[in-house]
Length: 251
Ligand code: 13P
Image (cartoon, rainbow, N blue to C red; front, top):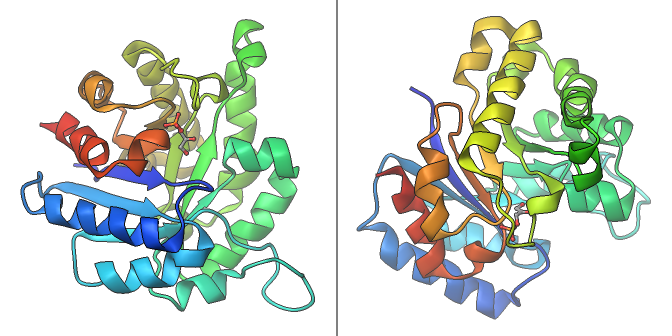
């Protein structure tokens, strides 16, 4: 039985005050929610500390949206994995398409971030996904396979056991254009098969989340698919009611 996960990627949204209000609202609702679902919130760096403190000992866990490639030193503006882990944060999103697209992150830089994450005990939520052009030209399988092989295949078997993968087709992020449940399942099965080439049976236990315009009204159909273990949620994670509503998609 794989973990069921609903993770909220707040991106560059909310002030610390708004973020704390949001997480308090989520906490109020969680008592009534399905307990088998693991909820993770990923606020901006500025309120990671406060959100980690408030949620400590609750069913909500906290993740960062990135971490630096290097351990420490003269890297103005960067935040290290050690700093993040020291706040009681357990997860880190790596390889989000917005980071790849706008900040030039590549497999080479992501491998360095992965090393930092594991060295500091952070669990990576590693994102993969194709653009619309790549889907339409039939390159989607090669693109996702390379994103997995170039980064996840660099992990040891022991490290891999902790990793979470998120499939986020770029064309479905923030566009309201959700992948159909069948399209998600097809890619998730492909990802699991790809992972199994190196990690064999361990791949059957890896949580693979779907991300891209997940909302309370489409979560159930997507989460019902065999290889979909939850969601990485952007826009809808900014409203406690919608975020928790997505968790109900497992019922
Ligand atoms: P949306 O849910 O807003 O489409 O964003 C998905 C995402 O990028 C989560 O990381």
